[in-house]
Image (cartoon, rainbow, N blue to C red):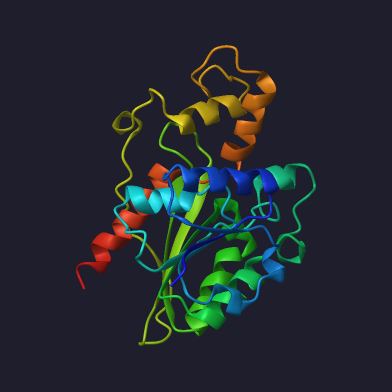
Length: 254
């Protein structure tokens, strides 16, 4: 097998992925900058892990935090949120499933063709009201996957943006229906260290405070804003790791 596949169309984030791979901070692999619409199922043959809409590698980082080995098969994907987000609605830019940025059908097409054993993903919680999770779960269940989900805060530092975390596991039993997790033990804010935590700094930066984003004084604001660009469109790995760990604990019981 060829290791890990990352799909990310933004050149800036794609280079960030390559830098993180070189630094050993996420799983080693190949970065593909093609739009998901231009990726063929055969292109994914042989990869143990595939991360779509990879951003700056948050899912790979979360898997490692949860104790998931780099060579353990899994797919991840955080489909674009713009068609369903509250922010897009406020600016008249949300069109739901009719939006060209609704890329779940392409992601699902690859899942249907390659049939990974496990798929884990994330989406804005407001997408639930648009029927996004119903569509995704029913598609997956139709292919014999058992699904589960949980809505969690975007981080554990008091920010109230909520995210839908979901997973699908290949099941020979056929359609079983999707149910939310009854318990995901996400730690409280005090459980995370704030010192040197880039995620916390990124959240502050999104509110206009760049003082904690980078540690060195004198860094140009433009550089800090470029960093915020990457963080602002990323999942929060510690929260995703708790979701993954909850799944692992359940899976290990069976």
